[in-house]
Amino acid sequence: MAELKWIVENGADERLDKYLADAGDFSRSRIQQLLKEERITVDGKTVRGSYRLKDGQEIILDLPEDRNIDVLPQDIPLDILYEDSDIIVINKPKGMVVHPAPGVYEGTLVNALLYHCKDLSGINGYIRPGIVHRIDKDTTGCIVACKNDLAHESIAKQLEDKTCHREYQAIVMGNIPHDDGLVDAPIGRDPRDRQRMTVTEKNSREARTRFHVKERFGSATWVECFLETGRTHQIRVHMKYINHPVMGDEKYGKACRYMDTQGQVLHASDLTLVHPRTGETMHFSAPLPEYFEELLTILRKESGRE
Image (cartoon, rainbow, N blue to C red; front, side, top):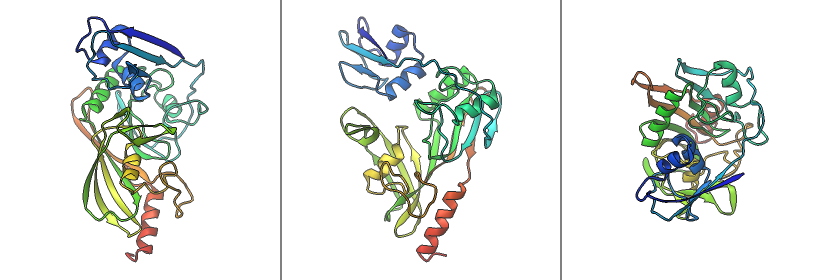
C-alpha cells in the first residue's frame, strides 16, 4: 500500500475530489471509490468528495497496491435484461459476487462479463472493469455495467446526482404498523467490526432510505425500499436500525428458518437511468426470484392469508 500526501496550497474552497483529480491525476470515479473505501482523509478525518478544502490542510491517500493477477473471462450464464453497445443490464443471481476481491477471483459477475462482452469500461481498472455500482453477493436483481468510458462517466454522474433511481424489494422481520416511512440516519464503518456498517455520527455520511409496506404477515413485513443515497449495505443497516432487520441477513440480523438458501431476502427490482448516448430515460425490472416468491407463499400460509 502506498501512502500519498498533499498539503493544500492555493486550493481554498476547492472540492476535495476536484483537487485530487488535478493533483493526483485520478479520475473522479476512482476518487469516489477511494473515498467510499475510506482511504482518503483530510487532517485525519474521512470526508465527502464535495468537502471544501482550506489552505494548509493535509490530505492523505492510502492507495492500494495493484495485484499482479489475471481476471479471466469465464463462460457463466447471464440473465440479460438489456444490452447495447454502451451498457448491459443484468439480473444478478443470489450468491454471485460482483467483482473480484482478495480470495475471490473466479465466478464473479466481472468474470462473466469479460467472457460475454469483450469490451468493458476501463475506468475502475482490471479488477472492476465496467462496474459503476454494485449489489451485495446475496442480493439479487438489477445491476448495470458499462462498455466504455463515456457510459461509465455518465452513469457514475447520475448515481452521484441521485438521478439514477433504484428500487428494492425486501422481507423484514417483525410487523411494521405504518404504511410508509423514511429512515434518515448517517452510516459509517462499525469501529468494532470493519466488515460491518452502522448508524453513527462519527466518520459517517448522510444516508436516506424511503420504504413502503406492500404486505404484512404478523411476524414479517414485505417492503419496497427506495434509495435516496447509495451507502454500503444501506438498506440492511437502516432496517436493522429501526429494529426490522432484513430476513436471512446474518450480518445484521439472523438466518431465516424458512430458507435452505441463506443470505438476506433483498432484491434490486427496478432501475431507472438516462441512456448515456441517446439521452432516453430507460426503466428496467427484474422479476422476484424463486426463493423470494417461495418465502412469500410460506409466510402467507403461516399467517392464514392463503
